[in-house]
Image (cartoon, rainbow, N blue to C red; front, side, top):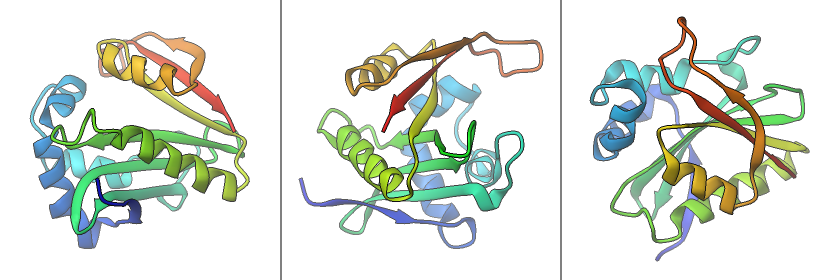
Length: 165
C-alpha cells in the first residue's frame, strides 16, 4: 500500500470528490442517514458543527493515497472540551477497508491531535454499526457514555467513545 496522507479539503474545491467518495461508501451513509449520499450530505460534512462551535472549528481532510481520495475525515476542535477533538466522520472507500487504512488514518489523526496539544479524542458510533464499534475499541477507545435516540434526533442510538492522548 502506498503512503496515505490526510490532506486538508474544502467545500469549494473538493465537494465533487467528496461526493464521489461518499457514493462509493454509500453503505455507511445509507445506514446513518437512510438514503444515498447527496449534495446535502456533503454540505453537512463541510458545514455541520456541534453546539457552541463554528465552521472555523472544523477540519476536513481527504484521505489521499497518491492522487486517489480513499476517504474523508471531519474533526471538530474544542468539542466537548477545549482540548478535545471530536471525530465527526471517518468515511473510507469499501475497496480499501480491511487493508489497514483505518488504523493508518487513526494514527495520522492522533499525531495531528498531539501536535495541536489536544488531550482527548471523542466520537460517536452508531449502535447499528458493530463493525465500527469493534474497530474503535480494538484501537483503544473506551465507552464515555450512551446516547439514546431522542424524538429530535435521527433515530440512532450511539455510543460516545473516548481516547486519552
